[in-house]
Structure formats: C-alpha cells, structure tokens
Length: 160
Image (cartoon, rainbow, N blue to C red; front, side, top):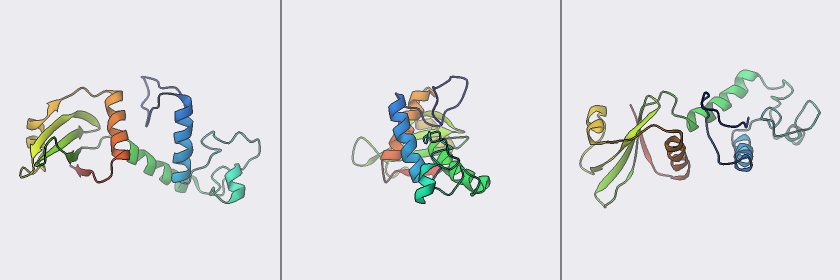
C-alpha cells in the first residue's frame, strides 16, 4: 500500500512522488502476482478485482487463495527489497581493473564502502570492516543501494 513516509515507521521502498510510487506498485503487483484490490490499486466496488476476472489474480481479494500462500509472495518481495537484519557484502567492479568495490550492510545497517585488490578475498567480516570508509546509515543511502541492486546485474552478494 502506498502512503507518505513517516520517520517513525520503516518503509520497504520510498519514491519521490505518488505517481512513481503507484507505477512501481503496479509493477510489483504484476511481478509477484499480487492482488490489485488488496494493494488499493483497483477502485471497483465489486468483491473481486478486475484482474481476477481476467485470470491474472489468484483470488486473494475474495478469499479464494489462502492468506498464508499470498503472504509468502509478499514476504518474498519484502526480503528481496529490504535489509531486515541481514549482514552482507555487495561486491562490484573497482576504480581500476585489478580492484573491487564493496558495500557492507551489517544487521540491516549500512556501515560503509571500500576498495580492495583482486587477490585479497573478502570473506572475513573483521578484515572487511578494517578496509571500510565508515558512512552514516540513512534512508537515502539505503534507497540508493536498493536501486543499485535492482538495476545492476552480475553483482556478487556475500551473506555472513
């Protein structure tokens, strides 16, 4: 569901405006086969959403699909788009050919970024922390990282 960001609540994804948010919610609803009625995208007054009549909805809006089954797809979306308590290193190309870049998320909190040489394997969290440039964990930083992960194919993500 779309709503204005509130500092007291944790949002999954944020957008600069309502139009961008609604467009993204439509894409998410299609990708994860969610219900437009349950996501407040279908304003019809009937019980079933319009896509249900076309066979594009499993019937979460009318109780034809068990809530647990529907919620599994919602949880899949949430886990893919949030860092909830995860510890991971996002590895990509560096500034030069024999270098790699790394971004560290520890327990869901952005810790910083760094660079290392190809022959230096980053699989130890303590070593990784020593090469990082510490950064503040902000909503904007997380939004940029999420967007980068979504758009960039071929990233190596190491989970600890």
